[in-house]
Image (tube, rainbow, N blue to C red; front, side, top):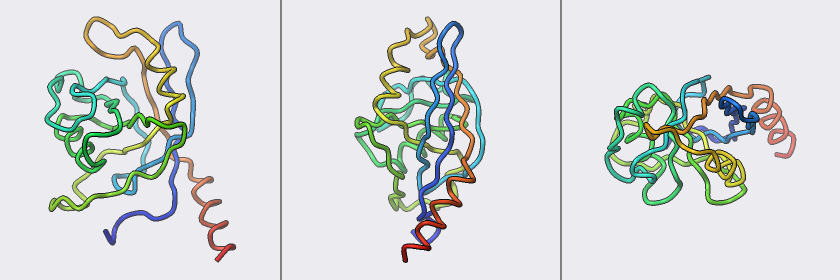
Length: 163
């Protein structure tokens, strides 16, 4: 898509929970959605792959939704999460690496995805998932991701110098 971001974009993702050590990592942004800071409770998606309508919408609304990779396009995951009222989306990768989730043309306008979307690696996912859920189905983590402007500028500079 012509509006898709090409250069990799990153955010510093911080996950905090009462009585737990902070989990912090660099999360890779999708090639769509805004690059902006977002904060909220991290809520597990039901269904976990977000390959159909989210059934725990009452928990997702106003929070950041945690979605497993697979089952459908990243674009669909973002649209399903946004429709359920999520303020951000974290995709749990099944691999230790991350990549910029690509936009898949689904016939809907590109610029209607209005939530930040990031991917985290499987080793970070394992740390988050090892923590027990609360009775309401929410993971006990609070999440914040902040765009790393300096890293984006450095990557663009390096790519320019290599060209």
